[in-house]
Image (cartoon, rainbow, N blue to C red; front, side, top):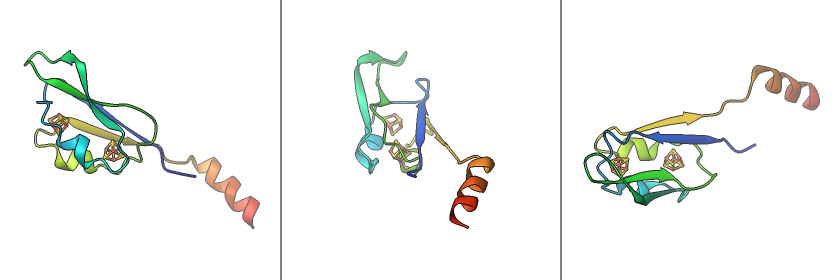
Length: 86
Ligand code: SF4
Ligand code: SF4
């Protein structure tokens, strides 16, 4: 099962530099040209499913504007898989 992740981008800190867009290996980040932050920058956003939670975007972001989340399998799911494959 592929790892599912997602990101939240803080409009207070994002300065629209686009570094995260170019760095994302899944190509799921883009700049929202319809939004301007209070500082007058376009905001990066997650355009579709496919984020793996790899956190490369957060590492390259010079303003620490990105928080990365990863979905982890529940303990129950893991136990069920062990039973199935035992
Ligand atoms: S790298 Fe950071 S500051 Fe630059 S566009 Fe992405 S979220 Fe915004
Ligand atoms: S966590 Fe990884 S896959 Fe998800 S948006 Fe950031 S760079 Fe792309």
